Length: 68
Image (cartoon, rainbow, N blue to C red):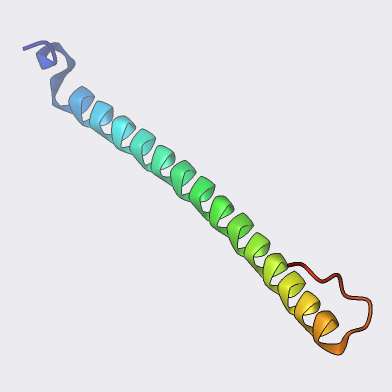
């Protein structure tokens, strides 16, 4: 086998290094997903606030832009 010259300790170190790399990549993926989810949540909140603001303005008839 190709990994035999490494020995048991070398093989264990290689596995630990690969596992660490995998965990780091997974953490990066989770961070990116959380960032995108937070942006989406903020955008949704802003759209909701704007929609509620337009609804109250047009309902009261004061300064609202009526969109048909």
